[in-house]
Image (cartoon, rainbow, N blue to C red; front, side, top):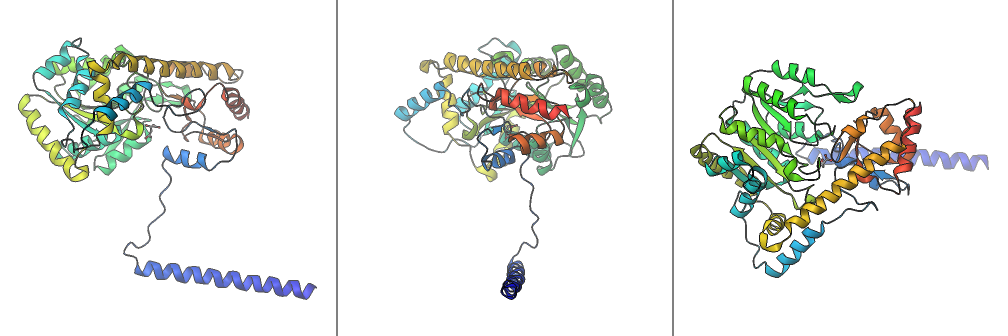
Length: 444
Ligand code: LMR
């Protein structure tokens, strides 16, 4: 009996050794014939990788607080009813699927310009810039595409010795986009994690210490990941530093509407910038925008880049260069999402007020779950007040990477390592479970 077992285990051992040898020799044969040498395994994406891990978890109580994408109170993604209506109209009326021009249709460009800079003739400064031909707008492949196009443009035409300053922390993909485009991202102080608050004093100091002429990335509203925005007065102070330092502002506006529920109310920074552009105090800046979040057009990849120039003739040259830059990358943008935008903004569809009210409801739900989470958290040894100061799709909890890891391993609660929770993953069915899990993790 013992002898048979011994023989079996010797055979197994032999088999494992032979298998290992075979795998090694096969992989070295493959490597020998590969042109790529050793390609190291890349780490999963800091945000989208969370969804992959979440999908592989079989715990029925699992919660995904990773990606910034809206879910309703039953945990499901939605299509805005106004978007569905627009699609029905398109289905009936659309007669072709031709390519759109390299920088998108004129109609889409004008909608974006009017929506963001003009607000139906209510924003005189933006209107002035449009009338003076000082805004070049291109449809882009959502916000990321917009950032990449402006980054490539800046790499081509801006003084490349200059840095691009990004807030610390910032959206995980910003640094990757800028680096891949050849820019030199560097952090400026924004937030003090130990205080769970903005660090405005050091923000100013760190900007003043940066070289003149740097590019500066500003989050228009609902700063990602912290959800903490500057006040009106703080923006004025920062804009003064931008003037003194002759920085080039690059504004990222992914969450327009998510601060107040009203897109026209969330563009104060843009209003300030257009005024300064007209006064020639900050004559040039750029804005990356997307309809991913506020119209729920995530996968339709619908966004825009607007470059505010110093003159109509500069605009002409810049527009031509944008075309030259975009054409070899993706030729022209996709049309379905931009046509939805066109239908919604077309007065004859009557869908604009509907969309605005749906967006308001989405933001209302986010504010409700933010409050519910706060109410369920144990405040005995931890001050959670910062949660209520933050705006938009996220709470920036202040939890450490270790605490986030424990939430994941023990409770199947998935969030990014920096402690950012995408609160749309919270609903009436899981808010107590989540709060209990956080309370347990915090206790230690
Ligand atoms: C996020 O921050 O979660 C979103 O902007 C989605 C993404 O692409 O990262």
